[in-house]
Structure formats: structure tokens, C-alpha cells
Length: 485
Ligand code: NAP
Image (cartoon, rainbow, N blue to C red; front, top):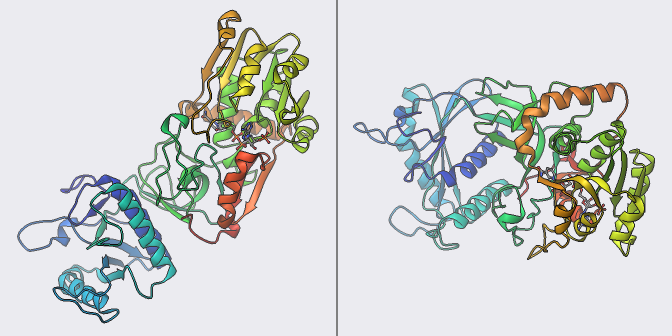
């Protein structure tokens, strides 16, 4: 905590506007990386006082270059043709003026303290590099979506200067050099015009202009956090972006990868969040017993294929459903389900389930909701359990459907329980022990769906909702070519 509070980023005139912090900080750090700058160390913000008598939030970002030399950057956006007090229509003049002003203000102060100084000024028009335009677009969208005083096209930013206070213990800078991102179905809002209503998702609503988030495997480039060091690989929640600055990671939300006998991509699926979801939702919440009858919907997905295999390994009878013949074949012939069917070809799901479960379903692992859930309720066994993991059929509906047949819960004394994997991260070590043993004994099969390059990501994300993927969908970072938005 410094004299300006514990903010990582200070906007020059509006210290503490937390909502601006994350985007500004991430974007600046992204840009600095591209410029070959390492974010890093402690800096005495008092040094950057605006005048000699009182300390103000500093206007600059202090970073450490590759060669270990510290440099102060002033990042400023200027109106394209404006002079200080008069109109100046010479293209580029505003930038030159801004740089001169910044140099006058900071150059001597910084160099006397042993820091290098550089002013980075951008206009909102003119011949700008693509990266600069991206930066401005992101910033503008983000700020406009949060601040009614920002009028698009009028006076976008009069001035924006940022300080990243370096060495904040919790900061971590990661990148995705040769690793993987995964799609999160509930965060379908890749299309900014489509909004999830908060009650239909267990994840925060997508904010247009901010990077889309999902689970990723990353390499740590720099860390002020004692739990991580440069060179570590981690998995956890991150942006669809090449470099991320992860602030104050919760121990459960960013996990160091120790076991590397498998592809790193597994940590976006079978060994990551979806794997833990399957384990917590089936092995723990549903309390399975040998010989019980299990039904899994969206069974070829990352979660479903693992639930089916856990059930098999426990000596249960397991049936899965999926949306294509190819997937049904996989369930039966690769993942070891006792049986499987294509739900799209079944006219009467209640009768179908009756056929597969004449004595009733002991455990239903719910991934889809809607009509499937109604049919399942009619087929539950007495004292059956339903783990409600997801309802993908409902995520995109304007109004989610109601559910018939709930009285079956009473008649059959069925326990229906919602699952949120974030409640179960404490199980991760025991889950990993089990998984390592299963891998060693070659008891598990895993299928992933890879598309190449971030530019393929939007189509791939949408494909989740039409069942184009099999298993966990990921994007190989090897072919990564740009930013998410
Ligand atoms: P996934 O691999 O992303 O697969 C999604 C599959 O769902 C699609 O391939 C498609 O397969 C099926 N699907 C899409 N729309 C459907 C519809 N309208 N009706 C029926 N099926 C549909 O999924 P996952 O990662 O295994 O996740 C499975 C579920 O668990 C999702 O609902 C997800 O939101 C949820 N989840 C919950 C938690 C939690 O903490 N509660 C954590 C992780 C995941 P078909 O071809 O078979 O239709």
C-alpha cells in the first residue's frame, strides 16, 4: 500500500477508478512487451511528484528494460490536431507538442534519479500503427462502456497517463508462447451484441471492448508473487491475448503445473477446470456406488467424456447422449460407455431413456437442461441424484425455458444439486493424484478438438453451441497471430 492507496494503476486525474484499471494496465503492459520492455520492479512514486511541494499520483509508468535499466514511460493520448491552446492543423504536431511537454516535465527529474525517460504519445486519428489503433479502440470501447461522460467521436480522451506500481507482490505477467486457450461455453458473448443475462451464467457478463476470458495454460515471464517464478507453467483463468498481467491470483484460480508427462493442452481440459468439474460433480456430489445406472448428457464434451469414464472405472452402467453419429461411436467405442444415443434422432426422449434405463436412472449428470431434463425427471430411480453441472441448451435463449415434471423429485425423493467447480478447487491435489495413477495405468482416453490460431477462435466458440466440437475445444497458441479484440 503506498500513499495513493493500493491501486496498481493510477489514472492521472482520477485515482482509484478501479474499473479503468484492469484494461489500462493490461493494455499498457501488452504494448510495453511488444516494445521489448519488462514490467517489474518497485518504484518510489514520490519521485514522480508533479511539483516540489506536494506529492501527486505519478503520471508515468516505470518499467525495466531487458538490460536491467529502468525507464519511465509517459503514455498519453492526444487529440490529433490540437495545439495547447490553439488549433494547429499540422498532422503530427499534437504528438510532437505532447512529447515536448512531457520531456520538459519529466526528463530531468527522471534522469537525475537514474531512470531513463520516454514519452509515448498517440493520436486518435492519422497514420497509426495497427497495434496503436487496437490499443485505442480497446481503451475507447472500455471507457465508453463505463463512463457516460465519454462521448464517442467527440472528445474521447483528453489525456490519459498511467502508472503501474511495480513490484506489487501479487502481480504476475504471463504469456501464451506455445500453449493453449480453451473456450468457455457460458461466455458465449464473443459477439458483443449478444449479451448473457447474468442469471443464465455462473461467469461474469462479457464487457464489450475487454478481452474475452477463458481457461489457458501460460508461461510465467515475470512474477512478484512468491508462489510463482519465471519459467513456471500455470493454468487458470486468463484473457484471449498474448500477454496477460494477472493481479493477485487466488491460489485456486491459478495453479502451477507440476506434472508434465502429458500435453500442456490437457490443463485446459481433462487435467484442468473441466476435469475437476467432472470429478467434483460425479465422484463427490453424486456419491456414486458400484453397479448404479448413470446417464450423462453432452457426453462427448470435455466434462461428459470424463464423467463416463469415471463411472465405468467405478463399475457403474453408463449411457451417454450426444448430437451426432460420430460422437455416439466415440462414446461407445473409445470412451467405454455401455451405450449411447444421438438425442437429435429421438422423437420421444422419455421413451428413449425408459429403453436404456428400465429400472430408472440412479445418477443423471446434467449438462444440457431443457427438454432433456424433463425426460430425465420422468425416468429417475428412487433416491436418485442429479448433478446440475450446466444447461447449455439454455444459455442462448432470450427467455430460459421452464421445467416440467419437477414433482418427480418429491415422488422419487431425488436430490438435485447445482455444481460450481470453484467451490471444489481444494480437491485438485487429490484429483491430480487419481488422474496420474489413471494415466500411468493407461485407463483414461481423452479427445481434444483443436483449431489453429486465435483468428479461428470466434467461429470455434460459436461452434460449441452447434456441437461442432468433440471434447475440450482449444486453440493452439503456436499459430497465434493476434489479439482477441
Ligand atoms: P463442451 O465440451 O464445450 O461441449 C459442449 C457440447 O454441448 C457441444 O459440443 C454439444 O454437443 C452440446 N450442446 C450444445 N448445445 C446443445 C443443446 N442445445 N442441447 C444439447 N446439447 C448441446 O462442454 P463441457 O466443457 O464438457 O461442459 C459441459 C457443460 O458443463 C456445459 O453446460 C458447461 O457450461 C458446464 N460446465 C459447468 C461447470 C460448473 O462449474 N458448473 C464447469 C465447467 C463446465 P452435442 O453434439 O452432443 O449436442
